[in-house]
Amino acid sequence: MKRFNVLLLLMSSVLFFTQCDPGGSPIDFEDEGPLYQFGDQVAVINAQNDFGFDVFKDLHTAEPAENMFMSPMSISMAIGMLYNGAANGSATAIAETCKWDEMNINDVNEGYKGIMARLSNNDPAVQFDMANSIWHEQSFPAYPSFLEVNSEYYSSEVNALPFQDLASVDVINAWVSDKTNGKITSILDAISPEEVMFLINAIYFKADWTTSFDPELTYESIFTSEDGTQNPVDLMPAYESTQRYFENDLFQAVDMTYGDEIYSMSVFLPKSGETVQSVIDELNPTTWETWTDSFLERPINLTMPKFTLEYETSLLETLTNLGMGVLFQPFGADLSNIAAANLFVTKVKHKTFIEVDEIGTEAAAVTVIGVGTTSVGINPTPTMTINRPFVYVIRENQTGTIMFMGKMMTSEE
Image 1 (cartoon, rainbow, N blue to C red):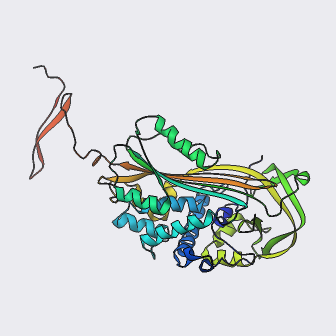
Image 2 (image 1 turned 120 degrees about the vertical axis):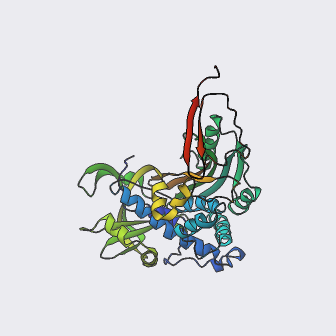
């Protein structure tokens, strides 16, 4: 299967969560039953998409010529779990970065609880599985209230493991593999000594096209990158097929539906003289709403590439760029609602998989947030046994004058 630079196929991850009717307008959740009598779900989805655009743009800026596939939902939901452990400036940084600053934390929690229920059952022709988990070092005294709120609103499994045991990495990776149907087999390579907790979100999506492509028509051709590089690619034609389509001065766009047409993949193909960067520059919540409202069904001659892509990245730099840098500072983060210890975020790792063929699409995403302790607060009651070489200083404290300095290397006189 050929890997290549698919034009904005990342937008498919947004469409996993932005529900549209055949005319392109967002579904009115208030018509979907008692669960959607409140606006929390809509507000959280809008915030998640807006945040997803920011992450997408930053990742593209870092590697403009590289393939990329990410899940706004997986990243946002993992941060949502962390949000319940943050306080003061750290909570503010999360809220502002994730566009939750006009909501309270209960709105975010209720929103995600409703979204999880909705997406797990809304199309019998689509398999959409989502799972959250919290893994903590078995001796780490996490507050029960933090674990309980994440269990209640995010259905998080809570598991205690001996992190010093190398087998704990295998246990966590096995959970990830199971929840992504084997498409992402690992998320951790090792557990650092300071790490005491991992918050993990996993998503698995599999759906057939509403109208599949004929495998007998698939043919090998050439894919030309923006720099002129040419590589082989398998193309799937659908001549005179009826698709949701629109174009403007910047691009042509097609919205291909899955199953019962609740889920879809939108592809934006820049016109001659335009680039992917040109499309990304225009991407924001307002233009996104305009674009998705503009699709109309019409016959077109569509040719779609067949591809497989695996993607992995650290989000520390991206989230720092977007305003969450305080969370990654060992003595700057405030995660005091997790436990009575000095905690900070050690890693935010994102890993994805997507395969597109004549039948449909299979995709998976995993986000892991590592939480570690600083040197202060690792043990509530420190133990110091001075039975090996040491250095010592005698000083005057008001002026800071060092009176004597020494070291003891042996107990022999």
